[in-house]
Each structure stands twice: as C-alpha cells, then as structure tokens.
Amino acid sequence: MPLIKQSTRDYWREAKAHGLSFWERMHGYAYARWPYHYIGLAHDKNKFFSLLMVPFIWLLDRHSPFMEPEDAVPGDSTQKRPSFADTYHGKAIPLEEATSLVRIGKPVNTEAPEQVIPYTRARQIILENPTRIAVLDCPCRTTAPNPCQPLDVCLLMGDPIVSFILEHHPDRCREIDADEAERILKECRARGNVTHAFFKDVMLGRFYAICNCCSCCCGAIKAHKMGCHMLANSGYLARIDEDKCVSCGQCARYCQFQAIGFRKETAFIRNDRCMGCGVCTDKCNKDALSLRLAPEKGQPLEVDKLFR
Image 1 (tube, helix red, strand yellow):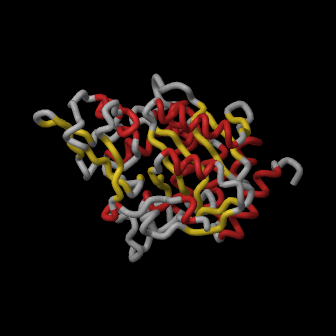
Image 2: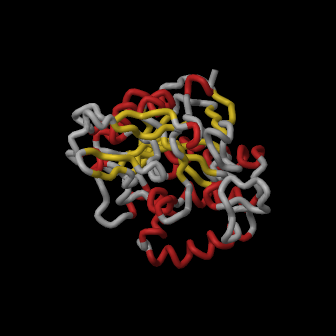
Image 3: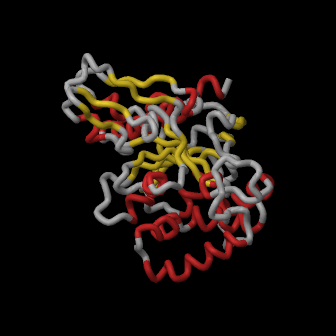
C-alpha cells in the first residue's frame, strides 16, 4: 500500500495488537489525522468540515465503547460502556514531574494504578522510544477565537504517535529534545498554564501528550468545569499560610479553576475546585502558598517511583 504513510501503518499495526477494534482504530486515526478539525468542533470553526466530521465521529462512536449513557459515572467499572472521561482524560502534574517525564530517557511499560489515574480505561504509560518528543501547535488554542500565545505548547512523547504527527502535520509541529521540552514547560508555567499528562483510549490506551492548558482556550478545562470530570487531581491540594498571606490576589488571578477565594485578611482554598497543579504557589511573592499531599484526592503521578 504505497500511498499509505509508514506512520499510519505503524499506528494501525500497534493499535490492532493493543486490541482496539476496527472502529476504534478508525477513531484514533481521525483524532490524530485531523486534530484541529476534531477539536475545533467545540469552538465552532471549520463549519464546512464540521458537516462531514460530526456524522463521521458519530458513526465511529456508535460502533465502539466510546459512547456512554447519560448517567455514566467516570471510573465505574460496572458500567456496560465507559464514560467520556474514562476514554479521554488528563492528570494534573506539578512542573517537576512533567520535567521528569520528558527526561525519563529509558523505555517504560507500566500501568498507573487507579489511585493515580482514577479511570477505567487509558491508564498505560508505554514509551518504547522515550527520547522522541515533538511539540505541536495546540489544537485548542489554534481553533479558539482570539487564542492565547504562543501556540506551540503541546508536547507529544513516544512512537508511533510522534512519528504519526510529524509525518502528517509537518507545518504545525517539530521534533525537539528534552532540553527544549523543559524550556517550554517552564515558560508555560511562568505564564500560569496548568500542566496535564493526557491519556486517550484510541491513542493506544496510554499516555501520549503533555499539555499546557489555560482555561480560556482548553476544551478539557471547560468540559471539566461543566461537569464532565475528565481531569484528575494531581494528588495535592494548595495550602495557605495565613500568617504570611497579605491578600494581594496575585494567586487568584492565575488560578485556572477559580479555587481561591478571600475573607477578611487572607485567602482560602476551595478544596472541591483545587486540582493541585501548583500554579498559585509559583505566583505568591510571600511564600504563603504550598502544596500538601491529599490522599482523598488520589495519589500523585510520581515518575521516579512509578517507573522503578
């Protein structure tokens, strides 16, 4: 099949070996081949393409476990079909853990326990070629009206995903090394972006990307706020030292989840909203904010421990 790209054949072969059905493989191909149109549906762009894409995605969903009943609960293994969040979700991770991921430098084949990734599907972390990293123009930002800048903030890791994206989107991505990946992570954190490790069932059921998200553009954050809980807490919660807090409001301005409020002379944390991302701790000039372990929110994705 000379007209089919090598990366497409590699994805198809590995997806079949992973146990994905024909329709799930088609879904994965559509997601990776046309990410800007796929994700752009939520931002009402590419309207002509949407007329074709919407029924195509609907058809794929009807023939795979991707569609779920309206009362489906993420993480409920007794359901006949998984919820949307089970099939596609992100795990908030502090900056140092994201840096450890891009610098892991050795093959990985493991599955994160449910306490870390609390979903029934897509928990594997398999990196056969972990030094292959690409940065992609963020589909959420690219398709959003008046998007945040810069656009190239999505990091993809490992094959066959990296090779697929590089081969099919050469104008929107480039291969980078771990040093540049770390630089991008730090610059995004300085802008107040939340770092998520993303998993998707049709992306071979595994971790495939590190996204640096802002609430104004990110479809996942918007969906999460609307009740589709596709983002998992980092395993931490922010904590305020009231003796140091001067109620300046700097932390709240950068919180992407509106998890910080104020009363009297100090700030307070809304634990039900806090995702433990750590952005606020970086923005406090008085060192009044820190992260504490929160077992009730799950366990952190600790790269060194998980990959021993």
